[in-house]
Amino acid sequence: MPALHRTRSAVVAVTTGALLALAACSSATGTGAPAPGAPGSSSQSQDATGATGSGAPATPTTSAPPQLPGGGRSLLPEYRLVGYAGVPGSKAMGRLGIGDLDERAAELKRVGTAYADGRKVMPVLELIATIVQGRPGADGKYRSRVKASVVDDYLAAARRVGGIMLINIQPGRADFLDEVEHYEPWLEQPDVGIALDPEWAMGPGEVPMKVFGHTTGKEIDAVAAYLSGVVAKHDLPEKALVFHQLSPSIVRDEDDIRTHQGVVVIKSVDGIGSPGAKTSTWKRLTKDLPTSVEPGFKLFYEEDGEFGPIMTPKQVLALRPKPDYVLYE
Image (cartoon, rainbow, N blue to C red; front, side, top):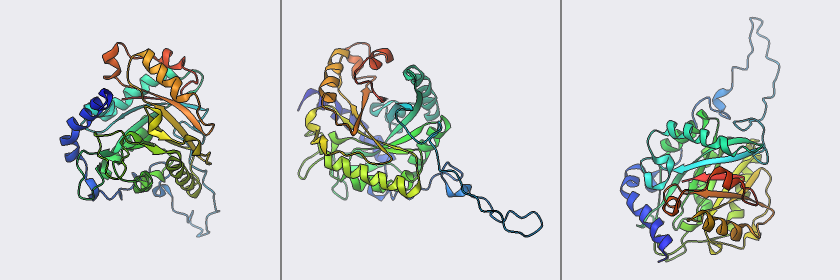
């Protein structure tokens, strides 16, 4: 097994005990509703009688379509997305698993200011909601899901800092699209998108942490098409669809990813190492970037830190193409 994969496998193994307590596995139904009064929630509707004592019906009004937290309905190029990833109670799986969630969200907002470079900054809380497991589980899918209440908590925290939430999926042997559809109650909100982690997408007979996973452009495109349908149905602002990639073999036939109305597809380049090594990986994975895909870049506080100081915002913004999404884990 490659040394890099051993490191990332160990991260998953270390956190399994904590995640079993957190996750509801296949018993999580995903029916938890967004908080009452939240942006885009039907609970914001008011009494339509408009009565002032006359009993006359109110003049019909048309509510404005929902907008992004910072205003507007387009993510790019208006915003640069800056995020933290993680899952509650697991320091090894990202910054969002350390300490108080609101403190981390506020910290993220401060970190993001260095990435403006002429744009507004959109804080992103990337919650690892479908979590790969080393054991098959009751349904044989090698994955578990966090409880609906956890997703609600992360969305509420994102809203408190004027940001968005991305639901990260490590599918095991489950299909990406099936997992995405599980989270539809949240995806119907204007401030929720998706992040796919194909390193953990297993084929039949494959076991997580034994082999690298992979996906195809067609599978990513199917998710993009689905999200576009959700956006159109609910008249939502643009949604982000991120896919993480650390080597060319993990995503095959990227040219099959098409442009879909209301969806911004972003490739997050996830290579681990020194600034020089990460820059080389960046160049390799963005050299033939399809026109339908935007660039993103991931930094690892611990793994990158083993090779010296991690890249600064100035160094990240010097990359070409310049990343539209910068994620810290």
